[in-house]
Every structure is written in structure tokens, then in C-alpha cells.
Image (cartoon, rainbow, N blue to C red; front, side):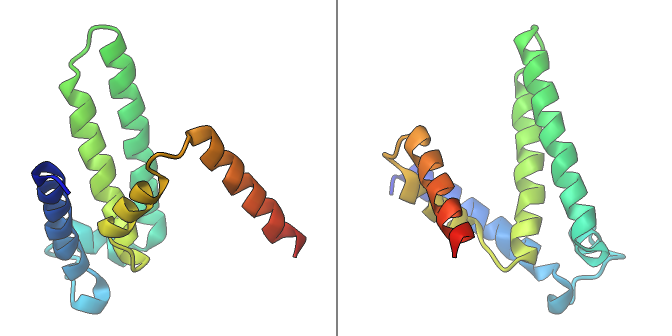
Length: 127
């Protein structure tokens, strides 16, 4: 793994540790932490935020297509990733799990990957 990828993975792991420390099971205090507050409210709260942030990514990209500030895309994607990390923590997953899945897909055509997922879904429905 290159230094950039290692540093990126380390940054995600450090952030994940902080997010995980805010889980209710780990004593996260909703009065003192935004993350703990979202986790305390339950999946509807953080899933709604993920939807909002995804929409903001789209809007920032559309704005950039028409002369807007491209750095806003980075800001919104960072918010999307952050809120997605809250969901990962809630479901007992880590950013490393996402990275492993992306690495598993590396070198595979997106068209092939989608076809494989559809085939597996059909097989699962037939059982």
C-alpha cells in the first residue's frame, strides 16, 4: 500500500475510532457530542443525514458544472463520508471493510460487477 493510501486509511481509522467511542454502548453522551446525538436518535436520524449529504454532493457537482466552486464538492463528500461512517459504526462495520470491498472489486469491470450482483440476487431469490 502506498504512503498516501496508508495515511488515508489511517485517517479514516482514527476518525472511525472517535465515531465508535460515541456509540451508546461505549458511553457516548448525546448532550456533548453531535455523533452521539445522531446515534442516540437511531438509524432514521443518521440515514436521513446521509440522504441529505448525498443530495448536497449532487447539487455541488451540478453547480461546479456551471462555474461554481469545485471545492464545495470536496466539502460535501467529506460530510457524506462522515455521516456514512456513523452508519458503519452503528452496524458494527469499519472503513477498512469498505476499503477491502473496493480492493476486492479492483480490476473488475463495473458492468461485470453489477451483472454478478444481479445473478447472485437471482440465485438468492430462488432458494
